[in-house]
Length: 64
Image 1 (cartoon, rainbow, N blue to C red):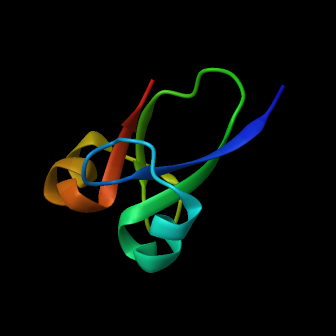
Image 2 (tube, rainbow, N blue to C red; image 1 turned 120 degrees about the vertical axis):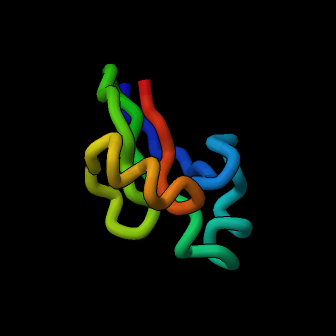
């Protein structure tokens, strides 16, 4: 079963859709299904390298 969740890139915690609308550059919407691992950009929603995540810690989240 897939579901959509919204997370803060700064804290990694789940946030409400209202909070995500107020802070679109630091939140990411994602569909949760199985087990993707790595770092995801809060801006583009794409996976990024660990080096990129280290350079931009407030705009990426760790998954998995």
